[in-house]
Length: 170
Image (cartoon, rainbow, N blue to C red; front, side):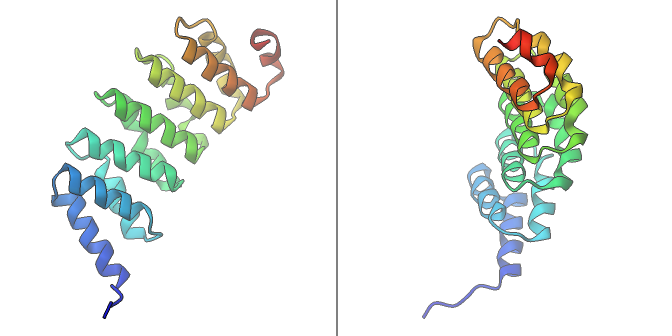
């Protein structure tokens, strides 16, 4: 017969897998923890943002963004400067999904990242935050060499909806 697993024991086991498992086990455990609404899961995911494996940091950032966890904003912000480009991209996207005003200035700073993909993710995130203080920094990216950055920026400016945006975007 099938028995129901006590949810707190499952979260404990998954948290242990994130803390002590290999990269694949960590990835699967992070995905499973992201499906719960348990505070211990959130705590484990936030702690995973400091993991030495970049894929674990990336997966944790993605999970926290998908769950739109507001208490993850401050711990996510330093990952906008992670050495791994994919972590920076995922973090910007996560902050965009959470759309908390605390991420405004760090996302504006990330518009200067050397990676076009990070710039595009950051501009999209700023569109989600929808704070008019992002308009001027975003306007500078409309002249970026990368077409994906320009398109992402134009969409972000459209989402913000500031009257300043009308002329350069059109």
